[in-house]
Each structure stands twice: as C-alpha cells, then as structure tokens.
Amino acid sequence: MSLRIGVVGAGGFGRAIAVASARSGHDVVLWSRRDRELPDPIRVSTDIADIRDCELVFLAVPARHAVEATEQLGEVVDGRHSMVHVSRGLVGADLKTITQLIRDKTVCRRLGALAGPLVAGALAEGRPSGAILGTGFPDLTDMVREALGGAGLRIYETRDVIGVELASATVGFLTVVLAYVQEVGLDPSTLAVLATRGMVEVSRIGQTLGAKESTFMGLAGLGDLIAAVAGDQRPELRLGRALAQGVHLTNAVGEAGAYVEGIDVAGHLIEHARRLGLETPISSTFVAVCEGRMSKDDAIQALMERRVGKE
Image (cartoon, rainbow, N blue to C red):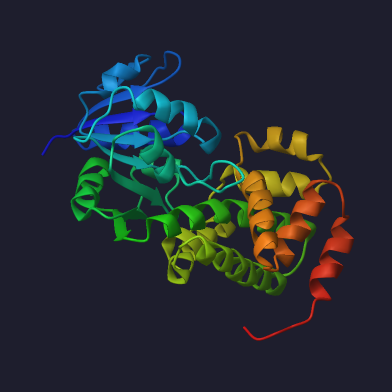
C-alpha cells in the first residue's frame, strides 16, 4: 500500500525519514525552510501547504522550533491527518511535550511519538534497528511500520505516550553525562552506576508528570541510553566529551555539530523536582558542571560521597 507522507523538517532525522519512506515506495514530500537537494523521488517544498494532501505527517524539528512549526501546520492539517514526531525535547519550563503542543496548535488528534535507539544514519541506510511508538491508535503504528518499511526495522508500541516523550528527552541529557564520564576516564563500574541511578532519577520525575516507570526502563529510555553509550555517534556524545575536555558550554555545543536539547531539559526538570521536594543529585550536579559552578573533581566527589540507600 502506497502512502502519501509529509516530513516537516530537513535536519538529519527528517531527511532519513524521507529517504526510508521513499525507499519503501511511498509518495514523499519534505518541507524545508529553504531548497534542499534530496534523491528522487522525494519532493522538497518550501510551501507548508503541500503537506495538506499527505495522510501521515512526520514532525522532525527540534523542540525549540516546534511552536512555530505546529502553528504553521495548524493552517493546513485537519482531523484526517495522522502525525508522529521524533523530537527529543520538551517545550518551556512547564515541560510541555510535543504531542501536547500539537493538540494545542492543531486540530490533529491521531498522534504518536517515535523514540528509542533509532538513529538517522541507520534509518537512512536501512540497517537493522528498532524503535518504540507511543500512541493511542494501533492503526497509526501500522502506518508508521508501513511508511518506514524494512524487515530489519522493528517498531514496538505503547499507549504511554507521555512516558515515551519524557524518557526520550531525559536520555538526551543522560547521554551527555555518560559521555563526560567516559572522557574523564572513570571505569565501567562508575559508568554503570550513573546510568542506572540516573535513569531511576529521571523516571521518578517522569512519574509525577503521568509517565509509567516501565517506559523509562524500555526502548524509549534504557534501551536508547545503551545505544548511546555503545557509541552511535549522536551529538550528545560529542558534547559530553567536549565538556570533559574543559571546553566552555557555548563552544562545546558548537563542537557537537547539532543543537542538543538535553541541557535545557535537565534545568527544567530540576526546577520541577525541586518544587515537589524530589532529589536530583546526578542532574543537579552535572548542570552545575555545565554552568561552571562546580569542577569535575568536586562533582565526582560529591556524587560518590552521597549516602547509599536501597536500590
């Protein structure tokens, strides 16, 4: 079955979705702010109105551009459209998810969030990979599987949409932390402690926002973090390494080669947790390092000297 697929955003992930969908035999239009060169038969357009005729829309823009993008989409989509986003970020200090934003800015209600260890390079090249789709519409999962195609791409589903979005957003930050620790030279045991306790820390915050703990321990959370630590070359890894080498945060973001939303997400999560009286030792310590308020030696000492409780 051939689908009419729209992709909003011409970054790495947007282009990968367009390439994978076209390879699967679908009619693909990619919306970009400026003209782009993409292989045939992908059609590139700078007119958002060209999304109107699509059945399935992939929103592939960073969270910081999502408000503008969804406002534009609100002028062309309606209840017939299905929309899936791939953002790893959240919007604003109130931690609004992208699906919540889409509901606010458009009348589209058949929504999903695609996350997990899927990376742009593997998707574009058709290498074996996996992902999870958070949605309340099982038939939307079938559409996404059909769209992205390939026997090697396994897409699981869950109804915990907010859990998928929060887990994906917080993995971005934890990836920076773990890359930092690796570059500093700490051993695998310390890495394992920070990875597992960090995931517990963010899952507790996520549960206060309506997410399920199990989602953080699945593909959207721990599975994605394992892929990152294994070295799938995402920008968060480059950012963490640069920070560990003493590069200032502003310059380190430049060296990452792409905008990394995890630092902003971490700051907002910490504020949310503080209002609820939740402890965030890993997140708080690392944000202090990023902002130059704590040295790496003091940070490691502070974490290791914390009282040990039950797992």
